Image (tube, rainbow, N blue to C red; front, side, top):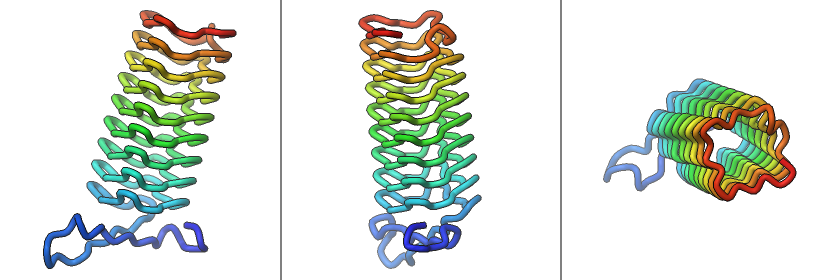
Length: 210
């Protein structure tokens, strides 16, 4: 953690609105491998925290600040990540299946080999993020900003990329089969000819210099 705190010993009390009258304040120990299933961490400042391998299934992290956090191999199954700040975070190998992450900020984050099946990242920012080998099948990526992102070998079959911006992204080996890219921008993408585009809806796509 910042300010010299040991991230493995951080304790975040649950917010008062989550407790009943007279209930004691439950506490969350934030450390690698922590059991945080259903935890309410909305709006918390958790910058630099290490939650490697933690279970955050169904947790509420909406609006939280996890800048430069380590979430390698963590489970964020069906977690609420709406408007969460994950700038520079390490989510490699993490499971974000069916997570709700609309408007999340993931610029320069690492999501290599992460599972994002059926995730909702509508309107999210993933500028310069690394998603090498990530599973984004059936993901909702409407209006997502993937400028300069590395999507090498990523699975994007049946993903919804309407109005997405992939300008300057690397897509070598990526599978966009049956995805929708209506109105998206693929200006100056690299590896275009090495990606798979079978059944893709490319209506009004900007392929300038692709």
